[in-house]
Image 1 (cartoon, rainbow, N blue to C red):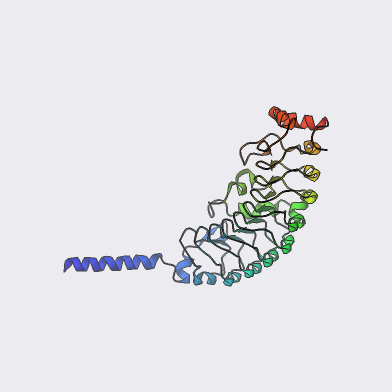
Image 2: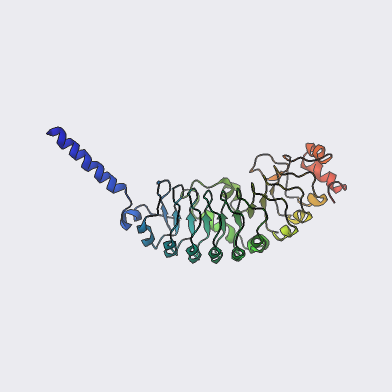
Length: 326
């Protein structure tokens, strides 16, 4: 009899604990929300969720939402109800698309949707004109909609590890990549919540890169960079490693603000004669995140290959003397 009572009590205790941990009411979910830097923040990361709990859409006050590292296949259209969101973290799920209603999040400044299964980006994302940081890396994208040219404040764009064969034309019209803006456009979004709210973000978004304007196109299917790359005058970091680039356009040498240029693991055999104008590339770099010029992992021909053994200064002296591709 006593054993039976103990079993019953244990069963009730487990049931009670299960109810306590479950996300079955708005109030229960709200208990996970915190105030950080004056913002309402909710993290439901790493909870094994296959669906977003319906009660979440009643938390209209949310400004920063982390749904990363779950098993979500769909974000429902009710996302539009969270119109106060400034940061949305969806990385590490199984999403094949984003809802068109994301365009209603007109205050959104940071969107992480990398490591999903996205095959396209909704045109409506172009309505999120406050976006400063956008990562769509590690998906199955081949292009971006033209509407993203409206993202005039976007300063950090990560499209690495997709299936992109040509730099999307909308990128050349993203004004923060093209024209100088006040620093507040590029610093607010990350400083306000880093790092305690979303600790699983790649290093390029942190450390010494917090204020840098960058474009990450590594490990795609690029065979060339168009001459209109010169439009991206504000770029400080350009990463195109792991593509199929054969030559480099002269226009690349006009991006004189570049501090990190990663060209490794392509099919580059020579460099433009004007590359010595990229004076902010201070050294030959080897670690993927080191500032400088990454180029040695290419089938470079002589004499460039041999000149590079003397470092970046030797290369630039060789180019100034008339070497390289004219």
